[in-house]
Structures are given as structure tokens and as C-alpha cells.
Amino acid sequence: YAQKTDKFMGEIVNYDESTVPAYTLPDILLTAKGEKVKNSATWERKRRPELLALFEEHVYGKTPGSFDSLKFVITNEKADAMAGKAHLKEIKITAWNGGHSVSFPVVLFIPNKRKTPAPVFLLINNRNSKNTDPARIGKSTFWPAEMVIDSGYAIAAFHHSDVAPDRKDSYQNGVLKQLFPAELEKDNGMKAIGVWAWAASRVMDYFKTDKEIDFNHVALVGHSRGGKTALWAAAQDQRFAIIFSSCSGSTGASLARRKYGETISLINKQFGYWFNNNYKKYSNDVNSLPVDQHMLIGLIAPRPVYTTNATEDRWADPYGSFLSLVHARPVYDLYRKKVTLPKEMPALNSPIINSAMAYHFREGKHDLNVYDWTNFIRFANLYCIP
Ligand code: GTR
Image (cartoon, rainbow, N blue to C red; front, side, top):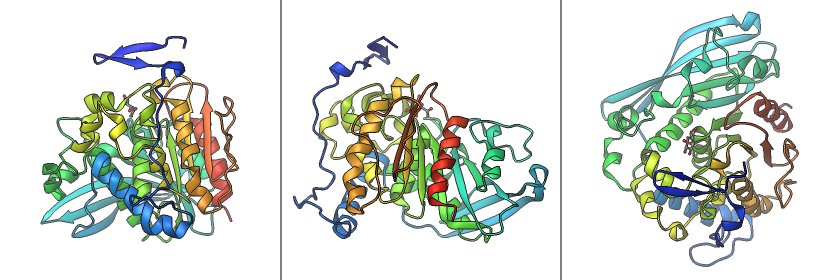
């Protein structure tokens, strides 16, 4: 990985730490009125809502606050799935608004060995939908359901394209066109990532109704575009108790101002339909963006958050993603959470887990794999298993 630059979509992509520009991050604890936040109460009352509004307005779009109704139907159930180890439920979630509806499926396995409600890992699946095969004929390390069940957790997933297709010419089909068509007309209206995050919250609504699920310990997991979505969903919906964001990169966990790997300009060119129209203004002017991604992590505080990167994924700027955690730390400190992050990038394959802000940089590809899940479970064990 010696190559220091690359060319993509007519732009030079920087992979050289020495040419990262000097930058000043917007101050996470300074309110719009110039007041320094000194405690969690002021953070929650003033700064948190300000930052949430800035991300809505300039990056991901505003999520509509309400809709008419929601319905859950169990479409398939098997009490002795996975050779008796798990209870399978397939749920159809239907949301109604203005006389129109959208339905999407959720697959859920609950460990039979548990006598109490199970904490659950919910994956926003942005890869092959066969990864989450309820029949377990197809198995994937992207969603290692048997391993999670053996560890005593429930595991669930929905597919992002079932609520907003992951294509620039059809992302509107589904939730946006059917339930919230007015959003498509607004420069700060939500786009695909907004919809995917909205859907994660609807699965959360379902969990609240399922007696077998420990509603207070729902872990949200996402990889890459799903990892960006997991962070945005958790920033908005504080019911998510633990957040795992794998290789989320640009407009996920990585700092935009570093201009290393994928930039705002490149992500807007390739994936403009993930973010609101206003975000396009920052393609060539990142320093005028009133937020940077450490603030998205700050919005998750004080809840445990775990982000990851991989050596063969410089596109996602591993160091910039680690720095995001470092710069979000002042918010966790307001809550006096135990954070053991080092100041500089941790060694390869050495997860920092005994910390409310967790991180690993592993060998290998841009992916979510068994190494990641193994460490996610170790981390969750610190917070979930009584
Ligand atoms: C890439 C994109 C990244 C990341 C990734 C993925 O092509 O540039 O921002 O989201 O896709 O979702 O796998």
C-alpha cells in the first residue's frame, strides 16, 4: 500500500498522511451562542439538539417525526430452528401514512437457552439478502447467526433496499414515495440513508412489543453504508443501546476535513442520493460545513459505541475514523464514562474493548467478518449480560 495517490471520477484521491491539509474541527462543546458546555445536562438541553439539527439540515436530511400507524405480522415462526437452538420469527412490518403503506421483512432468531428476554444484535444488511437466510441453508460471515445465538444473544436483520432501493435512479421507491413524498421536494429532506435509519427505528418499535427481547439492550450493527446508517440512526433514536459501525468511512465515522480517501465531493458524485441536497454545497468547501463526523459520534454518547477499520480499506480513512472517536471523547467525559482509547492509532489487530468508546483496526478487506463479530460480542458482554 505504498501508493500515495489515486485517480477516481476525475479527482485525485489522497492516501498520503503528509499531504492531509491543516484543519480545525468545529468545537463539539461550544454552543451556537458561544457557551462552553461543562456538564451533561447542558449538553442534552442545548448542544445535542443543535448538533442533531445541523446534521439534519446539512447532511442526512430531516426524518419526518410521525406517520399514521404501524403493524407487525409474524409471517413465519419456528420454535426449534437451528437444530433446536433458536426460535425463528419472520416479521412483516407495515407502516401507513396518508393512506399509503410500505411493508418490509425482518428476520429474527432468539436463543432458546435463555430464560430471560434476550439482548439483540440488529444488522442493517446492505449486502446480499441471502446473507440472512431464515432457513439457514445459506450462511454468511457477514451475519454469523449461529455464533451470535451460541453466545446467548438474539440476532435480527432487515435489508436496506426493502425500504429505499440502493440506486440513484430508484431510491425514491418505497418509503419516500409512498409515505413521505414531500421530503423529495426539500433540500433538507431525507434521502436513502435517512430512510434506512428510519426503518431501523421501526424494527426497534417491533422489539418493544416482543416479550422475548430485552428492549433495553438492542445493539445496532452496520457495515460501510450500513455503518453510516447505524451511526445516524443511533444519533437520532436514543433507544439503541450499543452501536457497531464497521468500515463506515466518509460521512460515517471518518473526519471529512482530512480529505484522505473518499471525500465529500467523491461521495456526493457517486452516492449523492444517500444524503440531502444541501450536502452537495460542501463538495468543494468542506471547511464551511458546520459539523464534522466526530460530532455524529458525540450524539451517540453516553452509549457504548464501537467502530472498526481494515488495512486494505484506505478509502475509508482508518486514522480519520479513529480520530473521530478521540475528538468525540469530551462528550463521553461529561458523563464520566470509562474510555481507554489511546491518543494515537492502536496497533493492528489489537481491539480496544474495555472502554465505552471501542475501536479496532484489523488486517484485511473492507468487510464485516467473524473477527469483527467475535469482538462485538466480547464488547456487548461488558454491557448486556447481567
Ligand atoms: C463505497 C462507498 C463507501 C462505502 C461503500 C459500501 O463504494 O464509496 O462510502 O459506503 O461503498 O457501502 O460498501
